[in-house]
Image 1 (cartoon, rainbow, N blue to C red):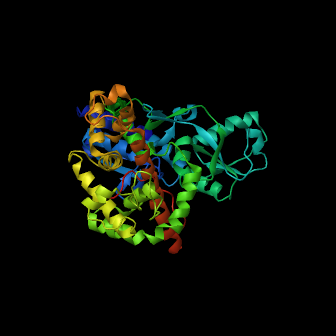
Image 2: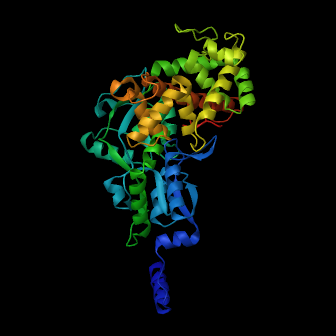
Image 3: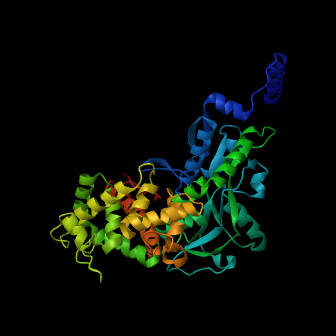
Length: 467
C-alpha cells in the first residue's frame, strides 16, 4: 500500500510538471543534515568545549560545505544505526562503522577515512589467550549489531564450540570497562577504541588481532538517488587533499599512539597522592591567567612529576622547572615554593602563548605554545618556516610536529636562524601533556561521579583544554 501511495504521489508531481527533489536538494531545502551516530570517544561526545569527536568534526565540516545546519541524533543502541539510515530517518550514519559485506547489502558506504583492526581484549593479570581456541570457558561479550558479531560468526564455523554474548545494553567502551573490572573475561573492540581507552584503564591488553585492517566509512541509504552520496565523495576527496582529515585524526589520536603502562599507572597514583597538595595553587594560577588549571597541572607534571624540590643538571628547579633568568624576569623569589613556581610557570606560559600569531586557532594554538615553552619560541618559528617550505601548514600542529625533529639534522638546521635543537623533545613534551590533561579530566569526572553516587562515567578523549 505504501509503495502504491508513493507511485501515485510521483505521478501527480509529474503531471503537474514538478520533478521530485533529490535527497541533496531536500537536505538543502530543509536546512539541516540529519546524522545518526553513537556516543564514544572515537565518534561523538559532549566534552568540556561542547560537542566533539572525529565523526562530529567531519560531519560539521560536511554540513558547512552544504550550507546547512548539522543535527546529530544519538542512537540508543548500536543495532539501531543502520536501520535509521536505511529507512530514511537519518541522512547519514557517521558512527565509526566498519565496512563489511553483510552491511553492504543493507546500506551504501562512502569513501573510507580510517582503518582499524578488530582486537581481542583481556585484562593484565589474567591468562592471555593465544588463539580463539583458548577462549573456551571464558566469558566473551561484544556489542549487538556490531561488525564484531559478524566476525565471530565466521570464526564459529572453524571453532564450533566457541560461545559469546551479543550485548544490546552496553557499548564498546562499556564492555572494555567490564573487562577492566574483571566482570567479563574478554571483549572484541576496534583498535582505535582500544588505544583511546588504554590510557584510562591501563591494565587492558590486546591478546591478538582478529582481522586485517578494515576501513571505516559513512553509511547512506541504498537506491538510485546518488546526490548526497556523490556530495560526500567530493567532500572526502577535498579534506584528504587539503589536510583537514589528517588534522582531525591527529587531534583525537595523535597523542594516544604510544601507550606507556608504567607511566600511566604512576601518573594516576600521583593524582591521588601528590596533586591534592597543589590543586589550589593550580586553580589560583588559572584564575589569575584565564588558563585551564588542568592544563597547568599537566604541564607541571611533565616538568617535575609535581615534585616541588625537583632540579635538573642545567639548573632549572621547582614544580614548573623555571630557569633562574626566567624566575628573575617574573620576580619569583623562591623557585622551590610551590605557589610561586606554579604562578610563575602559568604567567610564563601565557607570555609564550601571546607570541603565537592571532590567526592560529585552538587547539593548535595551545599545542604550538607548549612546544615553544619547551624548546623556545625562536626554534618553534624555525620549525614553522621549515614546515611551510616543505609544503606543510605552519599553523597546524599535525604538520609542525613532523618538522620539529629535523632541527637536529644539519641538512635542515643550517637553513634556520637559530640553528640546532633537539627537536624530538618538544614533540614528546606536547603529546605527553595532552595525555596527562585527558587523564586528569577523566579522573576528576570519575571522582565527582563517585562522590555523587552516579554511575561510572565513560572516559572522554578531550581534544583541547578550556582556554
